[in-house]
Length: 417
Image 1 (cartoon, helix red, strand yellow):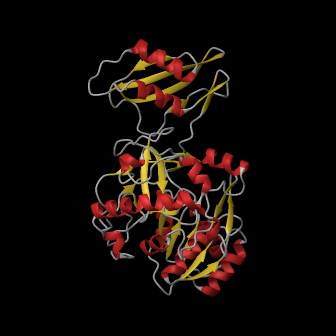
Image 2 (cartoon, one colour):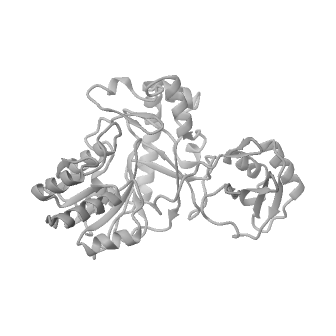
């Protein structure tokens, strides 16, 4: 499957970057005018000079807990939606709760590219098992499949026997849903002797597609690929395949999004390959969101995908970034650890380890020096106390000794003792 959905997937990477940032200042100006909550969040920032990533980093990162608090104070959208765009659209509620309005584009979550990469083609039938109840997942994938020209059976979740009966009658080519529910359907069909061999492809999200699970599907004749999506932005990245139908490394980023990977608790970029929090800026006129921290960890892959798509790649979902931890009755936040690093540029990487010593909590900041720099341990300890209002130790470690897993705070207390 070496074809591509559209020319945008193969454009020159530098041209893509220029095009995105050439659109950004005018987009931000319109968004601030249309969405008073966004305007208040961004403050008096002059949007005209925001024409590259360095300038974009001057804007604050909006994290989910902050958006939830603002929506609770000013329901339902905290002024982040354009009221003039809401007519005729759906409104969703995701866990949190967080409310999202449906975008007014034909493929609001840009899911068509993910379907195409997974093997769907115009005229195919898609059995969509993402939820249509309250949350946007089912509608995001539904709209993407139909934008590609597929017919969609809106199956939703549960009712396994009815799912089997419907699939036997409709003969879909492609399953869309969580990775494990496809196994539930196929297993039930096998128990009942029902032929579901029409399902030869799958596009999954919302859970882990383990290698053993992918192989099991392959042995059943089903080629399954993943996409990474959120309620706010739709499909952010998707898997692609080589000429033999095998998955290429990582996930290719979708178009019309500015994606950053930052150190958890901050808006500062991590080095290529380092695990950090995924931050996204979209171009929705209905729901303009700028530098939203997804709370999900990932890492960038170097180079371009062998499939010919030229956008950047990520390793996929690698865990959650929210590592706020209570120590001695007080919360310690990754932002406080980041403040210590800001004060001490001689630190290249750090991790705050929280453990138990007797009946009490202890915390130790493990630090890697930057480029052979000499660390002033006493000064770092003082900064740690200033930032967290708690005393803690500082332990220098060799460069590269800290795991590349995105953890800023590691809670190593044994709660069973």
